[in-house]
Amino acid sequence: MILTRLSGLKQPPLLTTVTLPTRHLLSTSPAASKLRDHYSFQPPPSLSPDPQKTNPRPKPNKRQKPKYRPPSSLDQIKPKHSDLPFDFRFSYTESSPIVRPIGLREPKYSPFGPGRLDREWTGVCSPAVDPKVKSVEGSEDPTLEAKRKLLRATTQGTPLTEAERKFLVEKCQSNRTKRQINLGRDGLTHNMLNDIHNHWKLAEAVRIKCLGVPTVDMKNVCAQLEDKTYGKIIQRHGGTLILYRGRNYMLQKRPVIPLMLWKPQEPVYPKLIKTTIDGLSIEETKEMRKRGLAIPALTKLAKNGYYGSLVPMVRDAFLVSELVRVDCTGLEKSDYRKIGCKLRDLVPCILVTFEKEQIVVWRGKDYKPPEDGSFFTNQEFFDDSSCVVGRSDSSNSSNESNHQ
Image 1 (tube, helix red, strand yellow):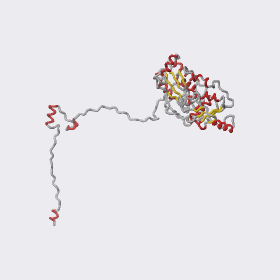
Image 2: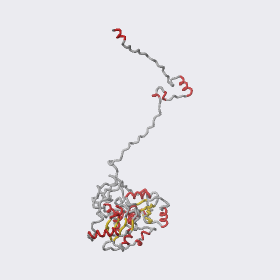
Image 3: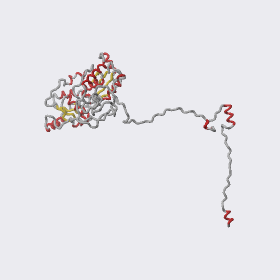
Image 4: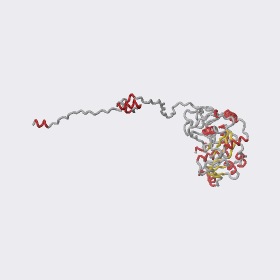
């Protein structure tokens, strides 16, 4: 029994040693040494027995690119200083320093960015006189206008001759150059001043095409262009202007124009359309609005068109009718409200209603037509040889229309 149990046990396997033939590398073989001696053969580094002995080519010291760090408002940026002697506004033709808003829609965040300009933002403008203005009403220093006139006279130098003017006008025609600045519904904006100076790098004059709401008062557009850029308008044909930079213009001494990074929120202005018209009762006001919407339209305004003849047309229509309706179908609500506000100041007239995309105006009880009320007596509209315009006497308060 014991033997049988012992015989059933498994014997442990015997350990055997197996010797494998060693492989000689090419570099240590005699054939490799003969190739190296006779034929200058160098084995590749991968076949080298000691890779540490090989001398790889050193890598050049590359300058590491700094890691990207997004801009932060906490960075200390040196504020820009500009010597321009006027208040910085978003639009110089669609806002007036005379009109006072009744409130602000948002806190006084500067559109130039936090800490990027050494002028305070009052919610309406950045004044050039007092950097800490407590009122939203802008008031310019009378010495600033004299300073602007002096700088403009210094920049312009001697007037152009007729041959020089024709030469510059011909160079700015559409068949000669495609460079052009478009002036739209916002009018002459602050950033457009920088665009005009950039165009003056390449040419002495620049073509400006005006369309939309600002063309109702082209005198104000021309006056603001000459006042803010120190240039001179040498031709005006409808809404197309040619602005000359001046004989003594120096590109190296161009003014510093800080750019607005976003459009500021417009303040709140008084209502344009009142419940009752001054001097009339509620029933008479309602009846006048019904009659105004029923009369034939004087004209229909095209979207983004030229409205330079609108004011003389309304003045002429008031000679035969006390109510005038202007069809504004298709226009933006803010656009025809601005147009109505300009008509109120330029004609002058009384706004009746803006219902159904119409502008209805009333001439009033004691209406007296202005001396230049006729369309055909407006010589400036047809004067293409020279455009001598002064500062517009009418205060353009078209920003009042955006509160509705």
